Image 1 (cartoon, rainbow, N blue to C red):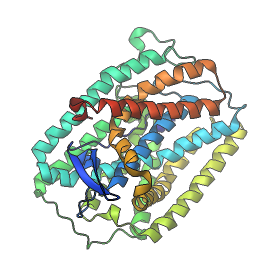
Image 2: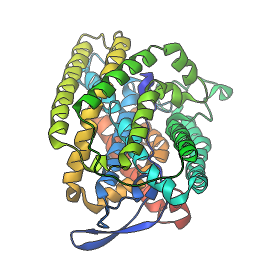
Image 3: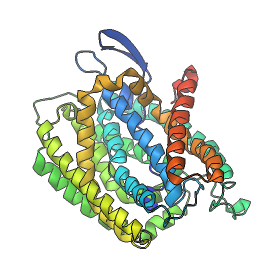
Image 4: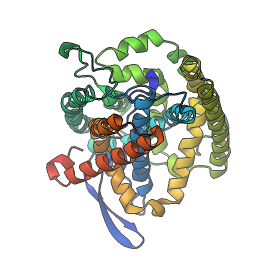
Length: 416
């Protein structure tokens, strides 16, 4: 479960300008993040809403996964006890959903993060870009590390069955990065890209004559990264040691770093050719069907193991299997979501895009929101299905709602 403990997201902003756009004949102004999703205008001047809409969905899934994690492990010190033998379908489904979501949502968010980096660096210059990134990453990181994460741990130890309950004050895992690991990794990737720009010179020009990668390229990348993920997953001692350190989030996600790097820099490359807006629908649908079959097969395995009460015993092998399948499932889901949201941008509309703009802040505060929400629910001890669905709904609504109100304050909006 280590690789799933702290999945997180934060496709960060590069500027906070309000970008006017046209949707259904009306002028809309959505305060956005021009670096990661705010600089989303086509050459016609119309704001590309579907990137923000995808962000909102990804963060909602992150919150859902962290709720389910409290049933099969723990999240921020919260654990909800449930008898696996009494609820085998729930146990198997929860584990499957953790693995399934982990196969695409972080990959998607690194891809989108990289997609808007080159044009932002070109617009601001390396020095100004890095100063801006340091501000917009550093302040949320410190607030999340010192305030939200630590407060979450203190509250969580009061919950029933919390693994922190028996720890003394000096043993509590204070100042752990937790879900904030993404900010650290993202900033490192930014540094690498800026170093590349400094060496080769600043250049950004869109050339749509370059075709999108074909099936052979995606197959090769999936196979190579699948092998790397399996090898990295076998380094259990390394990840366990990191998990006990202040960098516990990296201990949970370190085995995926090569794939995250690949997708981030693929996003950078794609921005020069608008690949994400020019997907081959036929190829996308073919791969998505393949991903769907793999995901259903994985669900069947999880349910069988759960009904046989052997899920915990076989978890190590299951983790290796899913590590290998991650790119094959993830490529299909990522491509299909990009294609579907691009074609159905108006269905989600402005409200979902606004939620995407709020998603960075929602990600930062969701740990303490979930801890507070799960506290009374865990005490009451409802049916796990009801508990999970209630906590997911409340966690999503409260996290996004709080940030949406806070972003009405100009100073806060300039940071998150």
